[in-house]
Length: 382
Image (cartoon, rainbow, N blue to C red; front, side, top):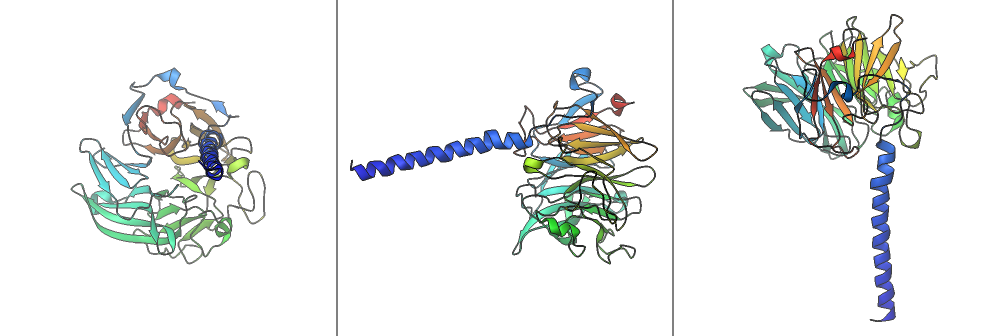
């Protein structure tokens, strides 16, 4: 073999080995570093070893799911579950799987939020938040369907034009006590959009069930609050206060995850303030993780004076007692017992239902992942 050819072959082999080594470092060193659970400064509460699996108080009710993102319950008691890859599942006495057309599963985008209309038994309306691809790139939108006789029909676009990206797509939707639909959106990786009230990115949106804009929205648009980085959880307490979980900064400076109480027209500061920083025109969080801990909080639910929210990187189910002064006292339960946790919903039976998210490329898959876990809230009584 000519000497030059040998050199080319050797250089090619060296290049292949270098690429392989780089992929190994990225997959097995960098990704685990950024997405593994961080140490917690919070009180550690109930652990799986305290309870045991497959008991009346804690059991696996579904498994082998593909990145389950949201859980809702039909009046019959069957679960509806969105999988980020684009499927809507019905789990229970009548299992079904529906593929939602137009879903673009790219990074953190895909089929995300799910909500049933408050009058679902009368109108059969089901709402989905999804990422899709257009000529302008990735876009998020909310669609409404009629869900009857185990079939989806009458697709209607409720709101579109929400900037999408591989990261920071928000995606949680829920009907509030006022009957309006609330939607969390991410900044789509462009931080300045969170402060731009003419953009739908980095916001809490509020629309009527047909997508029309309520007259009392503060900016004559769907925008209800702004200055959000990537809120992925929304719920209301008994007093009608809206609470949200929000992802803080990421990468080397991960941390500063937030729990916010959302009020009309308020600016929640991203990217201008974080943590305990203040600004006369902006709202600081009610609670945050600090700079040395990352929750990566996702779904959130309210039950009997407590907020329960899931931690992705935190790999915990967090319980936040709402104190009389509206501060929060937070405890981390089931820490690292099930890996990354995403959806949190209160079932018709009063139990807490939580989904894992270990198949999303950022976790360590365990046998049966991904799962939905049913938990008796009496385990977490003060």
